Image (tube, rainbow over the protein chains, first blue to last red):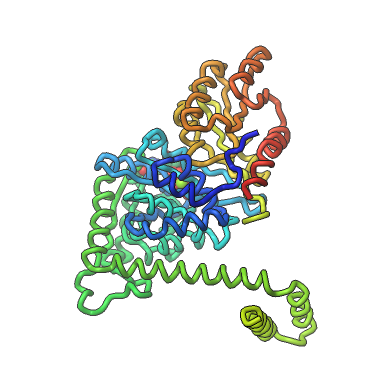
Length: 344
Length: 140
Ligand SMILES: Nc1nc2c(ncn2[C@@H]2O[C@H](COP(=O)(O)OP(=O)(O)OP(=O)(O)O)[C@@H](O)[C@H]2O)c(=O)[nH]1
Ligand SMILES: [Mg+2]
């Protein structure tokens, strides 16, 4: 019987990972992904070292070619002597909670490169939602000095938008022939895109998709439109980032140099315009809010008795109380309990 | 997640040159339906690719599908690549057509279990659960 997993020690794993152990890093990512307490120990040790990596999110419909493109982008980054990590998220089955994580299938070229670390993640069952788990995994990789981290989201739903809470640069991958409309127009994804890529440019229908995107006046976008502290004052409006619309063929390796150039240009523009810091603030705000919720939920779970919750449910069922008031009464009781605990 | 069991992570890999991944895909889906997270890496994996994926993905168990008959050539190299990464104690099972004599030899090489053609997926699921159960409890 193997003893590898026995009594994980977050601090020791963090040390070993910092020393270059890929095995320790992999173990650590498991603990962090699972919200294991030792993962938290490691995270708080590593966090001060994070904040250096350029985090690039790849989002877009299922089958648009995100993984194939990430494979190509990674190869190009390696040609430029950058080491990197890939975090690829695939959907969990809502029925079994299991998942087939297949993104590695398209990343064969990266499989044996010691300067590349690839981690697959399933989208469900993570405390705090997928964004939280992905962010924590990215934070560890960042803290270890990985200069570029590519994050591939699942091809549908909220997670596609949430990547903007993690990444500095969001690459939206579109592909021709995925129905009549441009998928992203429907999904409201264009607002979060910093770079738009029409992949599968080797296919004849690509030109039509390109025209559709261009005609939607999608070029000439901005920094900080998504709101929040990254919003710019008037004097910086002139420095707005023009969202490029690029064509690639991930299959044939075309347009990749231009895409990687655009990623670098976006990063430089963020820094030059002082937005890198604004993004950090926005990310920090999102993280703090997520953790506040988690900690508060933990307080509720620990200090409110199941019977009290049940009584509240029944009073709502009987229409003796409305849900909001019942919840408020429980919160009042929780606060009293905590005050009594601290003064007693 | 203390006290709660996390999902079991499995690497399903197809080393060697045979081009049939139907069986591997059936197993991958069955394991998913049993609540496991399956990393599927596709055809023609080199021994180093298999070991490196097992390491990076921190899987609990590795399943190899080898239908080419090349198991006696491939398995020692895979076990060697795993050992180079300090993963010699990772449970590895094998699916394929394997003569009885080879089964013994493979077990000596460290293969935990060999599943022949026609093995029901529930047998494999039960094997995996049994193999990693204790570890998951100890980790929590
Ligand atoms: N013709 C053509 N096919 C491509 C191109 N890029 C990817 N594909 C194919 O499109 C299919 C899907 O590619 P993936 O890279 O797996 O797409 P994905 O967006 O990662 O898909 P999910 O992870 O499932 O959301 C595969 O069959 C690829 O070979 C391209 O540039 N041209
Ligand atoms: Mg993919």
